[in-house]
Length: 335
Image 1 (spheres, helix red, strand yellow):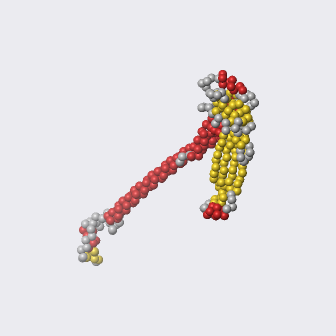
Image 2 (tube, one colour):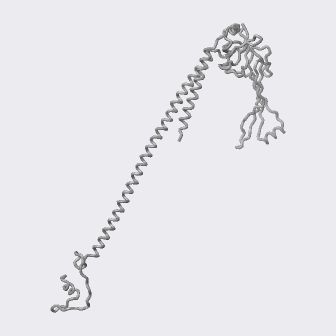
């Protein structure tokens, strides 16, 4: 039997080890990026940097846009807006009870060109929705109850549904939010500086600063390593336990097999000995029967050597008659 639990623990330990390794490597990469304290210095850095290698930097500023989005529900202004609408309803299951469920009706996302501004300069950010660490703020969450139409309610009831209403959620990246961006800094043809996802390297858009990101990655790396060691120890314990049980089971089976073979051999020996004893008993009985047939019926000690022949007459010896048998014995010299 394959020890699936031990193997599962070892595989989990391997996965956690690689996760911790990746987190530690990302933390090392973040430590090596160029920190730009003021956005006005970024233009000078790009002018003096090597044109072959990508320039990965970290900058901090507040979100701004020349054409922000005005949210309909919350009234806030943002640069990234996501709207979702979920239909909530009660569903009649096979057990005869009603359970609550939901289905996504609408999912819409909008984004306008936006930048970071720290008061000394601006830098545009591209592809932020695919960056690590981006969290959109829930600006509005409204639940609209379904209408009480009799016909619609009857049709839904016949289908095993009870419509509760629609939940509309609005998530945005508001203007004025302080963000830290880690990515590749480039300058376009018109001289605008932007930060985008590098071909190889980190890309973060987060409300945490660079030191907090490094500390968070280091913490996760340590937790992954500790969990990996724990799963490794437990997996090795399960594998060793299974191996020990397997060895002991094989040993018990081997000893049991030896005992069974010894018992079978002893039984065969007893059977052979019993059969020999039966044969000897039969031989002794035959000999006894043979000797019994050969013993004289008169003296019961020696084998017989004479035959009685009935003559049918008597002879007189003195005044008494002598049987013919006794005369026969005398004639042959047996008396």
